[in-house]
Length: 548
Picture 1: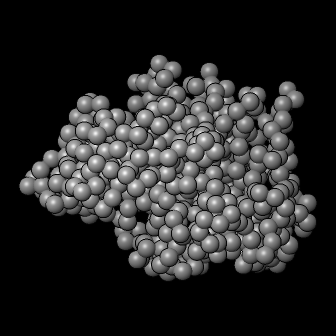
Picture 2: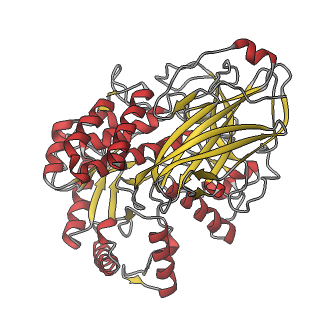
Picture 3: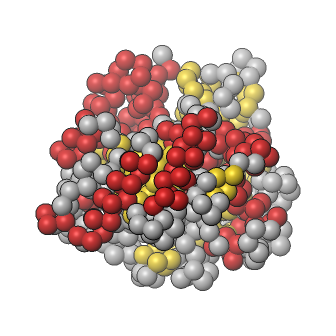
């Protein structure tokens, strides 16, 4: 039987410590210990001895940590876990409904993604909730179990613990308990709630792609059925919970008539308003009409743009709209297409911005320039050039950024987003974005499951890139009509929350301090702090400054 260890070893999520290792402890009996959220634990890692943990968060923020259960020589059967409410000494309480536990699901990587220097092996990634978030009941009927679960002899099972601090929570220090049954092991931790709140609407704009037919196919739901729309809502809700802006379903937007004019239905518009407010939308793409918008469909496109802009302006949404004019133009013809389409948009309806996944300096001079055509620049991280970007920002234009695959010059790696790279890679791009004054971040999709066929067991989702385009897992495999998030998606949210810390520090009159601190973590897209301990230290400094 597990017994509470008398050693009190506090690790702060703002400090990653390397505690002592006791191999005999692991060999003789099961154990459980705490670890920060940026550390991956393999099934065979030697257990540590961290028996307490302290975490820190603002109001309206999520803060995660991990509990690792090691099976010892005999293994463990039928483990269940629960979280107590968090209570402060002044009587304040954070209900246990704001604390979510997930079993971390391992995938075996046999062949590394290009440029990965990590070893092949078993990587935890998918986070299976122990309790169905929509019903409050244990998950049932899936291929992979959530709870109860077993731990094999001499193996580890990490549990992801996520605490959400409600906006109206009182600041102060709270104490909570995680109970592991039937072992009757109680693990104590503390949460310090800082005296400031993160905004509901993210400061960093985003576009992480559409779900399309991918979720319908994986969840065995026919398109446009009640089940499909429920799934679309739940996946969008999950994106919003991770401070990412879900795209707006076409059935919620004004319908386009054959002549390009729009039809506005009051019931649908009310649903659209609910979607915009509930998910704190930071931006959304519009489209051009017809196969030849600058030619035979020009009149229809012009009518559509003007009427849609008037509709958006009447609801205060006109500054959120943009047209994703062309993806990665890469020759002279594509550049000319961008210029022609941008000219149409700017002439038809000034105010609607043109977004293009391209950098201000073309890769070949003979392509010409897109300056004057593009309003929102979205350069690939390895093609980011500081001086041209600074010029576009000074001109009042927006700059986002994006990543895909493992592109870039040899020796100039960026924070690649595949499973077999450090989790810090998913967090640090928001810091780099703040360092350069960027406005948003783009990623092509979160549900690219077609190639792998079974993303729960096959990590190579796009060619030989592990986890590329796949930040969610289809919940049907665990008995859930909704998404299962990855550890990588959680760290993207952690980074966006860090962005809010820096933004709030700047707005409090400490912009120079914010720039000083961010450069200690994020120096460029190819030079960032690899030691998570230092990032946590900077976050602690900012939190203390804001709280005071």
